[in-house]
Length: 143
Image (cartoon, rainbow, N blue to C red; front, side):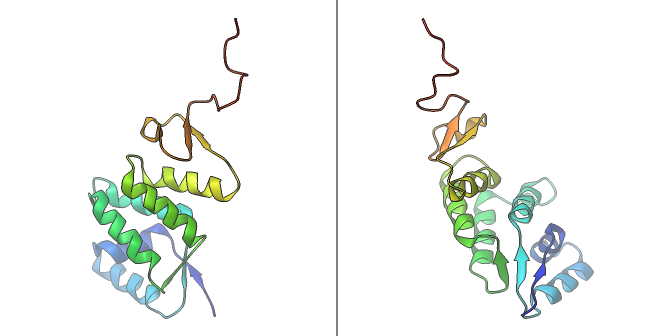
């Protein structure tokens, strides 16, 4: 079966219906009974756009949208399980969805931690705030 990739703006039109003509076109493409592939980058852009000033989606609405998409047969993803793991952390955490997806993808690649300077991730499971990793003596002063 043929599969098509979707850009962020197709999903934005489909979800917000802010342009009737483009919404109809996006709906036709998505409901065409062929899988629509969504990359991790598109998901991150989608959350960023929907949370922005133009649309102002609250976090709980973003979560509902992402969950519905993950459970829809219309969409295929780079790695549904990794996205779901990021979504579960996003539900409970203070950081952005993209941050949790970065961490989940890194974990999937075999990383033990994701190092960050993002204060919202300090203390979060799977993240290390700052550049000194446990057991790393290279950045510590010696007496």
